[in-house]
Image (cartoon, rainbow, N blue to C red; front, top):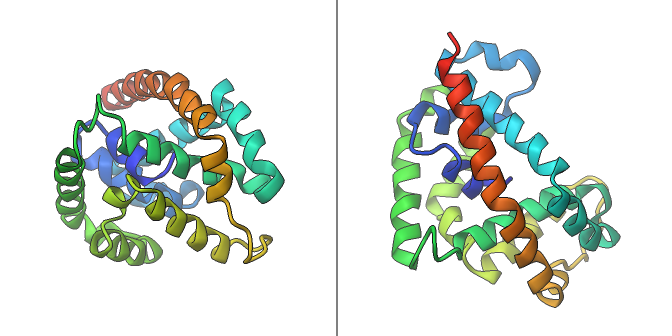
Length: 199
C-alpha cells in the first residue's frame, strides 16, 4: 500500500503511524534501533504489504499494469489504491475530510522527526509541502506520482505513460479496490491488536 493507505491503517495510533509511514525506508533488522511501539508500526507495514501482494484482487489488477511497468506493477497499483481510498465516500465523505485527515497525519509525524531515516525525512518534507495525501484524490496527483516513480525506477523508460491504463480500466481497478480494501482493514486491525498485546 502507499502512504495514504498506511496512514489510514494506523487507526489513529501515533507510534504505529510513525513506524508505518517510515517503514519502506528502514531495512531489515534496522527496525530494532527504534522505540518498541515504532517498531510495531514498521512490522505492521510489512505485514500489510505482504497481505496486499497476496490478495486475489491485487494479483488480478497488477496484470493490467505489468505490460507497462513489469515487476513494478505492485508499487504502481498501491498508488491506484490510494486514489480510490482518497475518493471513498464512506471513509472521506468530502475533500474537507481528507484534508483534515492529511493535516492530522503531518502534525503527528512532525513529532517523530528525530527518529526519521534521512531519506524519509526528505520525502516527508515533500509530502507535507505538496500535500501528497490530498493529491491522491485527483488524477493529476497520481499522474505526478507515477512520473516520479518512473523517473526513480532503474529499469523503466522515462516515456512510459501509465495514467491512460488506469483510465481505460477504471472500473476494473475500482472493483479491485472494493474487493480488497475491506479485507485489508480487517487484517490490519487484527494484526495491530496482536502487536500491541505483545510485550
